[in-house]
Image (cartoon, rainbow, N blue to C red):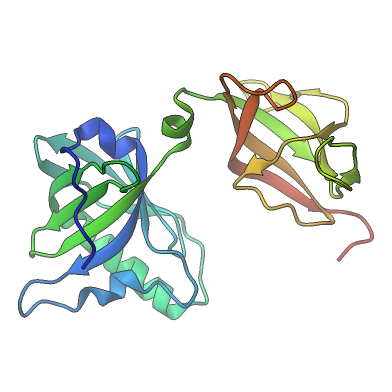
Length: 247
């Protein structure tokens, strides 16, 4: 059993400030074995809950699942879960997804204990049947950078290119150009290709594949003169295309 954080209790805003990864699941006496929820598959990431705009989003299943929620003091009410409809060849992961779908609406209480120093905050969720989940928090990008982001779109070319980085020898830059869309989703602007000297958090470039990315760009404070003034965080991949002649 992991050690409980030693900091003060968090409020409802704390739920939205962190990504919550499932660490432990406790079952009441005579109840169903809860180790299911901790083993989404060999090498798979643990279940993650994100509380965004009055919805809780469940990640690291076969599909992305979400449910509306409301808070009344230490009580939490979750609606019936909805999910995308992607088929999955991993039967264990599909069964886990079905179990999560059934248990989410049974959540009844929540509590957050904030950590001190390097301790991670801890979210405890209790369900009607007595099941308890303990989840550790990692800061969202808004929390990490202390502000709301600017939303931009970047098209990333299929191949990196050699560029002069200054401090990294033989550096290979992403090649990008800005894309803008109107409110109706129609492309209204395509910029010039240029070298991109930063990296994009959450994005792993695959050579030979071009992508249009939706990016959250955060303004940084007190950065060195030779460093980027922004942090770039991947929000979603809008579209992908394999370079001609590549397989």
